[in-house]
Image 1 (cartoon, one colour):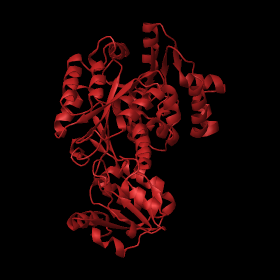
Image 2 (tube, rainbow, N blue to C red):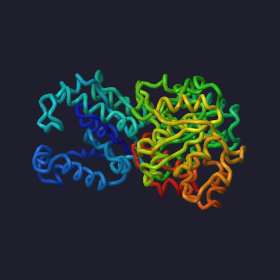
Image 3 (spheres, one colour):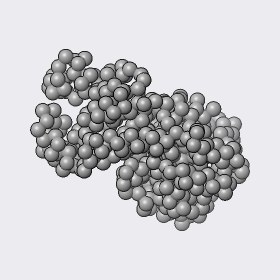
Length: 461
């Protein structure tokens, strides 16, 4: 057993850790105590002499040097802000988040000698730091307990019950397998899902994730994320949810205590009203492609725009055309405008292009207007080129060698548009590049870990 306790100050990590250690007869390691021992001074003195930056550097070193094997590990409140810390802590561990109401936290830490992290009054500092850290806690946690009204003994018993029983009842897992069998996903994945109902093979600590869409069979996310989970030693499994009824999927997701979902067509807008927290970027784009649950909170993000922006970062200020006016196009407009590009939206249905252009205050027109624009950057945000519709939205005579052509379609890896653009001498960016970058960002929201792009690419092979 290896359990890592995370959470804000005053949520009971140290006392819980000591009790759990005694109950299970495994060592208790407190990272703050280890930092003080290695530094030869108190946390207060480290902050006074070296500031928070110096403390965080020492914290990284201590976490990197934690011994392997069975242990209960208590951590500092801000440890989850560093993805490298989370990667080191998560390997082979169960991450338990302890939470408490702000008023309870204030009462518990009011007499603490730990230095403040802001110039705000204590209650305001607690609120501000919690708002900043909540998404990071949600990402890093496998299991959550509210300690506001629980004694340390009750918290320890809840952790032990989770380790033994998990949070996904057998009947819910059976219902899940029945859903998969009738959803049209590959039989190999249905067979793999049947492991969830095998009492000898099922690990109750397993956290479930998945992709939701209709269709969803074209997505490469299940294979990718399951490989990444194995790479980082995380006890989780990623599934494929294909159904035309989003609410049906969400009801099933609640029954199986799902931790996170990737969201694809046609649900990126429909899912927003079901969320409690929508990040700034997703709100501006009007679409969510990543959802993370933690207790009563449900966080929505958009990582598509990151996958579009990063490969085009060297094209700041250039003239761009976006083909399409759906959810992917909205993410593309948002990404390109963040690079100060002059954007024009072209679509077969001009009214849709006009509606999207009005939201982002940019130009628009019909698809036939492409030849008059001569853009430096072209982004295909339509589904044209996706299997089985193997066509190109543009013809060879419409392209110039000075253009950069980015096709957001990634199945197949080389679309007809990418092939034509490459043969025309254009710089090309395949949709797999967008997928890799948005998936890396999505994995961080799911787990708190920031995988390298090289690792994500290799996991796709």
